[in-house]
Amino acid sequence: MSADAELLKSLCLAPGPTGFEAPAQEVVRRRLAPLGEMQADPLGNIWLDVGPAGGPQVVVTAHADQIGLILTYVDEHGYVSVEKIGGVAPLLVPGRHFVIHGAGGPVQAVGGKKPTHIIPADERDKAPALHEQFLDIGASSREVALERVAIGDPITFTPEFVELSAGVFATQALDDRAGVYCLVRALELYAAAPGAARLTGLSTVHEETTFMGARAQAKRLTPAVMIVVDGDFCSDTPAADAKKLAGEVKLGAGPVLGRGAGSNHRLLSVALEVAAEEGIAVQLKAAPEAMSTDADELMAAGSAATLSLSLPVRYMHSPFEVAHGDDLEAAARLVAALARRVGEAGAAESFLPRV
Image (cartoon, rainbow, N blue to C red; front, side):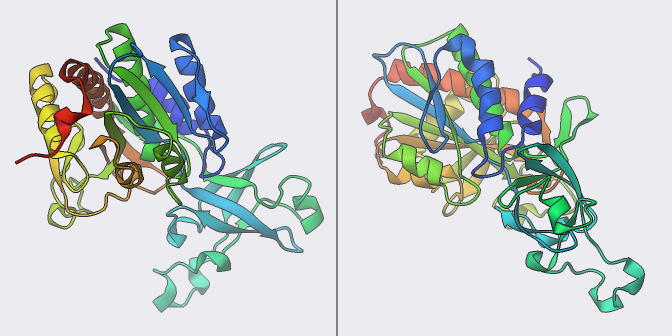
């Protein structure tokens, strides 16, 4: 089955930097409304249960927030100062097109930049620190600017969604709206053919900065199995080296299973069996230390066997990230099939580590 491009587009184009995830979460709410009543917490996490209440609980989770900027100051000439939300490299700001998401609607902005002609030659390949940069919204004064924007407004790269070739999409926020796509589709697939397990889809917040959403849910959840879906670095471009990325990851070659610190070994073995039975191509990658995803917080709760399931993404944390729709749809199929297998296996003790 090919990917639902419209679903992915609606997820990726919804603005949702950390702390401002509501528009992205609303896309999830609307899409999953036919499956049941969504629950939420004050932090902004949302979740939905599908399947029988009496069976073992399987949670599939992905984070809804994206990297971005936040407005911190407006000078007397109307220029806007910013600070990063998550991992935004300073070199991504000069000359770029941004959108400030103000109370009165979107405000267009560009990253200010010295003309190359007047930059000393030894500085042309460097970007100033973020606090030294500014955005231009075309305002003539602080007063004029503050009629359109306010301190604390979230800022994103200009949202665009491009299909580079059949099934290959370039857009902002694939980290981790691609994972949220997988979560949504997995719930839909499981609802259409449920097993004995209770499948919970959890869309978290605050992953890009503090993992706070996952930390809050780790105190509430006691599932048998936790599947954490996030983006992973592709090694198939001239800019990447598989040996430095803990393994080879190719776009279009299937979702990635982490082997090592990020996954329960017995659950990983079951996931590989299920993938083979379902005809789902997967990739295997070493996980030598912390995953730097929500998996770290959720695993630390100690209540669930955890699987780190990643999606190949090129150019992570940039204005245009790239993913293959087939990888996303395959991941959703794997999650639904794995939930059915867990329902057959029964209690969490099935995944206690043994030699």
